[in-house]
Length: 168
Image: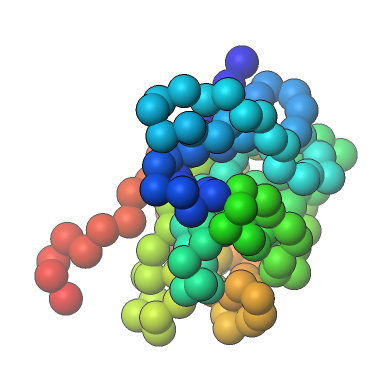
């Protein structure tokens, strides 16, 4: 089964490509030929089963980067950013955070500048524990690194969206 699907122009050719997570295995990627045909296949490097990705230009270089959550089901999980090269490839970028938890496969990622410092932060949801956590970005190269998460909302949370609702 497919656990997550994201669309973005990962190879900077003017059309959206697909990056997805499958039930058990490495994330996959299909490249759009510009006509809605997805013939070329690619894999995204990973160290464990991945359940959630989010695509966004985290460092302002016009190439899409990939923020990820990886549970390993051995009592800890991983969160970090992979740097896109503009050719559809992703490499390790930020210092990966390892944190203890139950390997929750029902995570969702939402990205946006929550703290007002110009860096893209992340909220990560959980349906089994720590409902909504905030990962604040901290400056780093080639993409921002992440601070350890803060609990924002304790009950289970299925999804999150970041938006400026009060125009401040």
